[in-house]
Amino acid sequence: MARRKFIKAERSKKLEKEMLTCTFCGFCKSVCPYFEDNQWDPAVARGKVILAYGLAEREIPADESVLQRMYQCTTCKDCERRCPSNIRVVDIVEAARADLVEAGCVLPAHRKIIDNIKSTKNPYGETGTVDFGVPVHRAEIGYFVGCTGRYRLPEIPRHAMSILKKLNVDFTPVEEVCCGSTLQRIGAKEKDVQRLMKANVDNIRKLGVKKVLFTCAGCARMFKEEYPKHVKVDFEVEHLVQFLAKQDLKLKPFPKRIAYHDPCHLGRHLKIYEEPRKVLSMIPEVKLVEFAENRETARCCGGGGGVRAADPSAAQRIASRRVRAASEIADMIVTACPFCVTNLRYGKDLIKVDIEIKDIAEIVDDLLVT
Ligand code: SF4
Ligand code: SF4
Image (cartoon, rainbow, N blue to C red; front, side, top):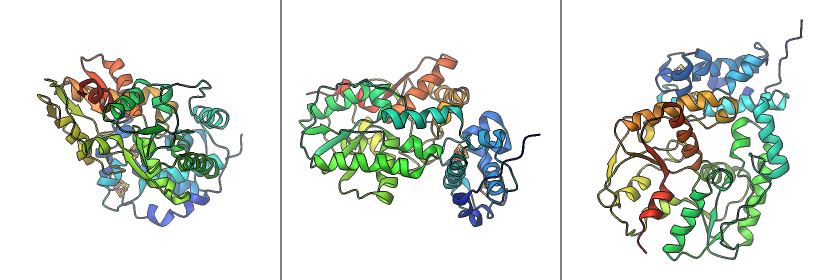
């Protein structure tokens, strides 16, 4: 019989006290998108807290099932909102993941991402360049495209750059490597994440940029919350929706019902809820409708935290629930993150409902009058 593998779990150990405050009340069950999908206790926050504690105390071995369960979390943070003990579930999950990776326990899909980033500096392993037609130059405003926009939905950064051009903003694309979000979410080595942070910050600084704009919620959250813990960030970080909300946008009428989907990393993580709604309400004749779960209660699209790579069918089912909910109230879902766009479209493929899914940069650019 194979020997059971117990791991050191140094990072999880630091959070043990917090784990012990879980009362097993189960409030987290009511909001967890993964629990809604598979109804298994290990998939919900309290289940992961127990697993993380067991790993830290060397009572639970790091076997295949524990590894899989620990990655059944999109890091959406919704459980933290419901938790009466204020447990930092995402920190606990990410600490346990880091301990597992440190011990050499890595899911094959995540191993591929780690290797891709090492060799190509993006999680998709893409080696080609994407030309957006704007030269890199010294400017006060920078634009960080992000890997999903660049390699999977380049129309989103193209629209974002087109908006900036129409608004006569002198901006420069940033010479970038992956922001490090994927690596950090899946628990890859911190020094590898920090190397990416340093490269990005050095590149930005060289251009004399004072403010960097983002269209990806995950990248924006990294720069806003995680970068300052490790590198000096001496420029402003703003998501495009924050920038646009301050402009006087002249937009063509669009008589459609739009439901805005709050990306978890923009909403619950960065608390940016009103700016995208302000931008959308500048569109004449648009009817802005709300999901029953919106703003801080918004349901996750299901793709984050390494789930889309490791468990694509769960990511698709979770997304399909959000898309179905929107199809009952709206003609279009608009969100502010290319990763949410890809996953929501993936969810739509499963249920084939009649609804469009767009990024806010696409719709604003299409309607912006010059
Ligand atoms: S809501 Fe918090 S305290 Fe209650 S079971 Fe979930 S993690 Fe534990
Ligand atoms: S962060 Fe989201 S996916 Fe993860 S356990 Fe909490 S509610 Fe579930």
